[in-house]
Length: 188
Image (cartoon, rainbow, N blue to C red):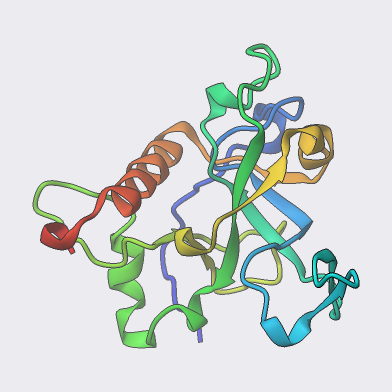
């Protein structure tokens, strides 16, 4: 069943995008996810005095596709990469994010206006694309699962970049990200 009937054209054509830079909204493939670790997967080594010497994780790394959340200007090579870390968020299958009858509402929530209901603030819809075939019906950015990678990984992230959002989509993405972090009791 096809969930999406229209093509939004979210991405720059490969010939038009900057493959020497990393920008907010760039999609990165084959990247390790970091974040919530189950305590049952942790082992620790302690000294005789009970001081923890190190932690280990007893599971394989979780790999997938992510999107850049950091501001473009702060991860720019020309500006000297002003951040210590580059913030990313995983992409998730849209069918795992909401019920089928709510998909249209989730997609429409990408574009915030004064009259928009503030629904699905934690998600930003990404249309299907041949470079992210693992999401044939589209996917969502999950802002609530963000994590960071040290800035020393910038070149590696650039080499794994597969898609770049068009400027008008990048603006909608940035606004929704800002609203996700801005919300408070009154705006929920």
